[in-house]
Length: 242
Length: 372
Image (cartoon, rainbow over all chains, first blue to last red):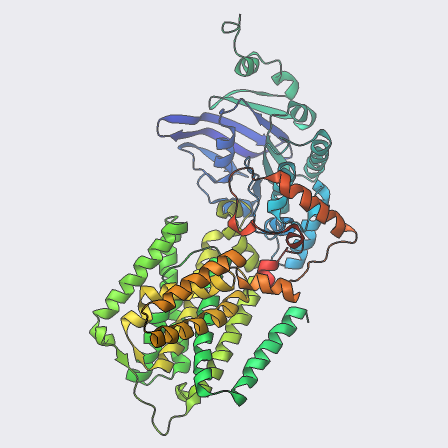
């Protein structure tokens, strides 16, 4: 399989603080990859750099063979990269369906088509009954679902999800996982940041682990959970807790 | 045709028939209302829909006024063409300011400051520019006996009234068409959260430029009419800071981000302004009109924080109810009532626009802002 996304030596510094340091990895076309790591590991920063919200201080990012670091987010979205925000960002002055329509307008300028696409997607993620509410009236779990629906509506080839399962009830998380599996079956590549290990174990083929801005391990989920450096990064060493 | 279109049609028809029985004084006053409404619509496109605050709209207004007047007076260019050139000039200046501001990510109040700076810069340039008459002003010659209003676009009260009514109707129709198109949807996304909108593929830079250009151009046309009607132009009176503030009161009173709000606002604010000024003069109390102005604004904030139009439209039943799928209405009501109290706000981004909505309102509001 070919790589849809390649990071080479990607680094991001914030005046002295190195948030992401020399991270390199490939994402295979059509796969589901999970990006995990403790808080502050640099996951969201890495996401931001891929999605064009943040420019890397060093290194390069290639998407479908084209170098994309520094390209504006709206251009990347048009090229097929969609992302959600960890801190959800509903368009508060608009209804739920209008929020999703904004994403759908990335692919069509026909409002009727965008509207029906948006409705379909809302049904799919389980927000269909709330389509005509104001986005500002949604509960946090519903806002997470809305983030996912908005990103899906843009018709991505690479879907990047930042902790969309956090705070969802197990039944809701299962529903989103079903959607993601279906989306993947349609050929969409998925990269997700996730803390819910049940989700990671269930749907990811590859796991990339970051800690203190560095890539410390990568592999299959089952290999990762027994990886000594991963356990160390989450639980500390025996030297600290003898 | 929807109920809203019928309401709009009846409204325009009533205004069109009004001159049959109205005095010239009333027509002149209403012409001022139309000009204020026209600028209000233009300003509202930029602020209410694309979310870019301008406090310097007098610049476009003044440039439009001088452009049309000077072309007509010095070069004999008919205002038919002059208006087009004024639109282009207003749009070009707006594009320049917008491009500078947006290119360097000047946002929110800082962008507003930039618009003030450019407007004041424009006023000072005109005050020291002898070609346009400087502080002494620029005057149009009195109308000759052979004047043909349809060529010179200058005429009596009745001509001005109809000219502005037609211009206003056209501008309003244009704003409805744009706001209800994909452009309008994307503008509102930018207004609510520009970064999130860009992540969804909204080309924010280009769309914001479109908003400021359209707004600047329409405002310049309003200025052009104002110059033709008034006949005399002074930098302070058509480019001054005071004017920039006056312009935004009407759309705020009528309802920011609504299509009809700026028109309603102009119908409230302009007559009130005239009346209070006369009252202040009669009573011999300086500044009484400003006091009344202030009290009105406070009243609007208290009674209808989202402006007068949403408040009235609800009572007239003109709010477009988005069809829910069968059986959803009841559930939605319950769900909203429940989530209203529990959601709170998760990350401090409480938007002033969304507060204070009662549950029953929020429900039918999918495109309220766009459709009113």
